[in-house]
Figure 1 (spheres, rainbow, N blue to C red):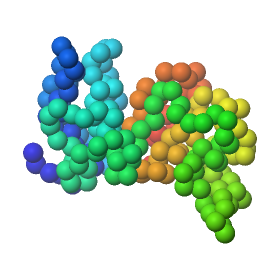
Figure 2 (figure 1 turned 90 degrees about the vertical axis):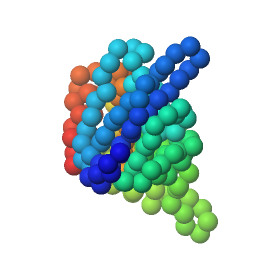
Figure 3 (figure 1 turned 120 degrees about the vertical axis):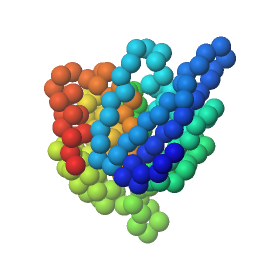
Length: 190
């Protein structure tokens, strides 16, 4: 495979087998910095399987992945996240009973004198969401907001954690047309 460093992510010959089924058969996929791609296909075509192979949720049975020209083999989703690959799934994977700010910074809350600096966390959360054109009460429980806003919070968290590649798995499936427009506006931002 020729390494092109304009390619932020390259999957080459990705294969995944399950008992009695070939889910992926030598799939190639290339993503350049700043590009947006959509994977389209029927149910069972392997879209989610490819995503799970790229993000470390599944171990691939063949092929290679490169990120910024370096071969990678994420053992799990946390390893992929540390490499810079973030994923947001159709079902928002956040904690509805925590505040928006707590969800954004879960596990990496700003600290002051050994305690969570709630004011700093709330300020950072407001600033982060403002970048997506979302002005909400970051101290309110996430459950108070629409699925679209929850999705934006999940995207903001994933980007702030990972930052290189963001993979959205069926992001519009549970959104209405106005919410889809908001999501597409956010995706189109440079």
